[in-house]
Image (cartoon, rainbow, N blue to C red; front, side, top):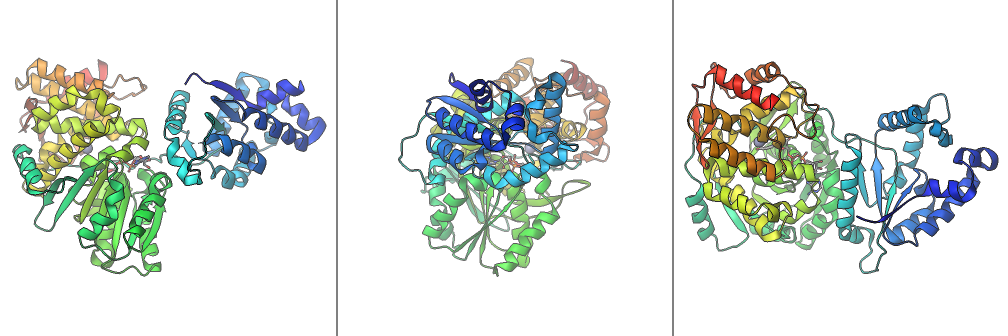
Length: 582
Ligand SMILES: NC(=O)c1ccc[n+]([C@@H]2O[C@H](COP(=O)([O-])OP(=O)(O)OC[C@H]3O[C@@H](n4cnc5c(N)ncnc54)[C@H](O)[C@@H]3O)[C@@H](O)[C@H]2O)c1
Ligand SMILES: [Zn+2]
């Protein structure tokens, strides 16, 4: 950002001419905190400065006030174990850990836990929290910059509406809690037989049929017909759209903590303005939350609030929240109305449409679930401005997939608009999401319960993709990253079988690259030590296997998928070797 940087601990050492540990020893913590208050007050007078404070600074009300008045407060969270490990590494590098007098005990890890627990309520006052456990320093920095760009969102939250603020950003090195948890074993997303025709004509029909310009498409299955609204800033119309759909009972918002902290109060307000009674329930973010236990917690909340059959559940979040909240909607009181408000790209173009709901079992992903269609889907593309970049990039893989399997024109559109799309230019973004949503809607309308097999082509890239996710134990690759590599495998396989010319393979690869997606296992986030044997082993477990032969979704051309069950093993192995080695 080209800003100045200032570390308050370093300033204190400079100012007093003593190491911090000596100030503590000779003059006590009281003296240190006094110096700290002074330093922070002074630091806050500077413009365009990133200020790093110690983890205890924010506990002092005066410090919080100074920081909040002029800057944006970002909390860098981490698990106690992570903090311990980082300090330990630091200590191994230099004896400077001595500079952390509060941790000079026999059991520093326990001390970190205690300190962190006592400070947690103060950390909760930060404008933005970054769970840093799995992130590199560069990635954390990127998140801080993103928080700064989004600062207008926090002003409302803190009740600061018009007061001018200095360009100051504050980073407290708070210790911390959870990010993503370990994921269960095998993914069973999208997985059935069949081949649909082009979605385009039906999309146009849907466009014409609905004069309401927000409607991107409609899903029309045997059990339910419902509109999918896609727009920029559309959240404001959520209450109105729900009422138009005949939903007038009390609304229970189910969300995860990340999403709710940004959009929760806004959505509550919008629903209340529409005259709906509102309750909200949040769950921790991350795939580890998609369990029966979490569903049970939501049931408890619904029972406690005397939720009735004509009340509505509003799933506000990514695919995890959608799957969980939808599962609860399908089962509570034998089924109640529900609305999908997807906030991640994956959820907008994929998870929110089609009514597949469910939770994970310790033995496998999505093993428990139902087909239960929502009453309304409302995607506000503006919410993507707060989605972490890696999640966003991962979502583009499914979007590109839609072009590759069904719609060359759409593929060309994506190709010509990479910068606009990755920069989330509103009009272009909305067009792409509406198109992808329509493609998904059209396919599920033809094959709601994955019986006729129309949904199979959505599995393009997923045979290898799922195997990669499983082989890396769901820890290294996001779903879309694995699918991007899987699509490269499928394209190369198509080429080997004489279906797709090499220009097609290159064209796909170039577009994936432009969207920042990996195309082989030798990615920048490397250390992905996956062997060909590991992948084939995981592939045998993939539920797309029918009998023995895998039903491969391949390409005949950009925009034209075919299904083949006669792919020779040696070609698969050769392609996997290329993905692993190139
Ligand atoms: N039902 C289906 O047909 C279907 C299809 C595809 C995927 N899925 C499921 O969806 C899940 C994956 O979805 P996902 O990628 O959205 O994961 P997710 O819901 O876990 O969201 C990813 C992360 O982004 C955060 N987030 C979401 N929206 C945000 C926003 N606007 N601003 C800031 N942060 C935001 C979340 O808190 C989370 O940390 C998996 O459980 C998968 O099984 C279901
Ligand atoms: Zn997928």
